[in-house]
Length: 570
Image (cartoon, rainbow, N blue to C red; front, side, top):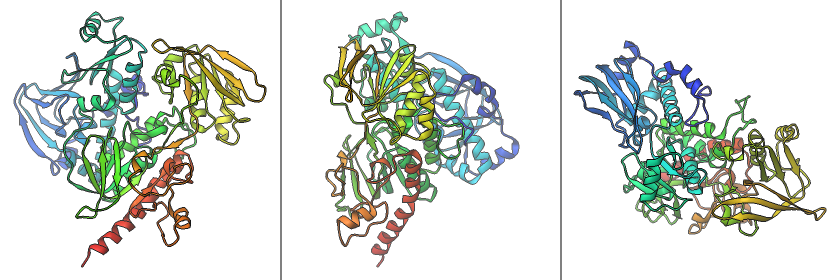
């Protein structure tokens, strides 16, 4: 699907208009006949709903006869006509494949005969009928992109422009490929009245969910439950593999494991993509000569994983891993922060790493108010025509600097060392050197932050360690891409061996530390618990390396499962 956009709102509306025939194809009689063996016929009377926004999608409806009107509806009840379906058309976007809540309403305008393919039946068709499946998946992806760009579906976010809470919620929905609409209270009197009704502070936000529920400054997990991204149902099933982390390594594991018939669940506490998901452009990944955004790359991986039957529980935070295998089926037990537990025969640690926080006073006061740990299409407009500061010397920092240079008047790139040669890919160094509004400042660190917490950051002071000189820069936005600390707090209850920096040791490193223990190359010191990507000690901190490890670990999981089956055999 290299030519397809993902559920990434970076695609242009003009591009979508030229591909409307792919968004809403009319299937031939032959195609319809091929689909019949996968679904069941359903009839609808005039006025009856096939699909209701905010309710779990029943699947994909192929229209056999009659007409269906599809509309978008947001949390404030605003209805926008989208498309009319008739014989040979089908209703549904990506939610039809996953069973998650629908983002549109579809109503029969006359007696309608349909063929319903449930999410499981739809996935079976996509696998069995490759050419037809490709057209269906392409259409569903394009429809999701269209819904995101239109801003006429999903929750409505209400608040003051650039309010920290509003930006936080936008970032969360954007990162997960969920459509939403933003209402500026300074331009909309009814929205201002709603804000006043709930007594919301200037820096806070109100969210109106598709079902009409109103949330004030909600945590991301609360918003996710309100719009149906995750449920709270108990989970009793036994998974072959549970993957903690939905960055490139975790998603690669999910795609390859699910495609080989394993029962897979993927967990991530915030969004798919990890750090890579926020990369504006990755230019050194095989097969994309013009580059690809991290959101597009990982968005496609999510679709692939779901196509093969992997279950994505995002956002869902893991509290602890119990490696005791006291379960009657000798399963590992994963405790979630919402009180539920999951069981899995094997676990893949793919929780990645997060950027370190600077040791500078008042940092916490300005996080989300001028201090950012990613640079996306949401933060870029805040930098238009202004000076920005970026701290870090790795590839992510380089990609962010180049991206921000397209919006900012000046980008100051601060690194503690003498330059970028030891930490950044050559192509990015060349790009930075060729960009006139990026200034590299070696041997330089931020020493002071200036501003008022409610108003946000307004300046920083930096110091050159070589000369001892200090300078003040008037800036409202600082982007931090400094070092990496492993996301492993959830492993404290499991005796997984780590190196001095906390990264999970695997394979030969474990064998050297624990004589007599011979794990597989990507297996930790605990049998059946694997580690891939940035969280693994000794891994190459690159997207390609992470994806390679995610693919490679699946063979080792199969070997582990085979040993488990052999032990269970009489």
